Length: 173
Image: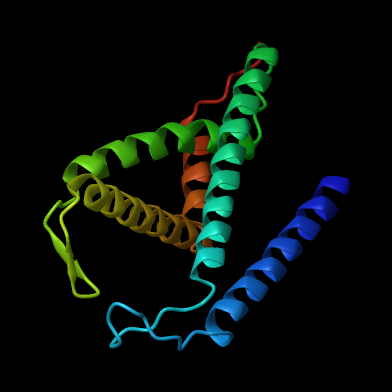
């Protein structure tokens, strides 16, 4: 119960800080003119927004690594027990899937030069890195939608009941 309350408070705090930061970004100094090219605007709190996003990504990465390490430790401790929770299974599966997805999408990402705000970006590593993150996010969103559809239509329950029927029951002598 305490963990649920703590999780809820942390979620509310993150949402409040995000609302304040995005509000400052959009409503205070958003129309400031970009000095090098007056056709573009230069929001005053872009730096704050970037620092906030970097902090969230760092916190997410740290929590992800800690969760995987914790799940591995718990699995080693419970060697004889076969009752793993769904969260442990998800942590043990999604960690390696994320790493593989990041590596594969990095190699398939394009490094073609892009024109951004009138200047051409030719840094191939950064272009591939951006493509990797965008592709990985899209893949994981697609997987999440598939899982939600899978669960909402009850397909997983049908498969579980079919598996139970296919397993022969042992007869007692």
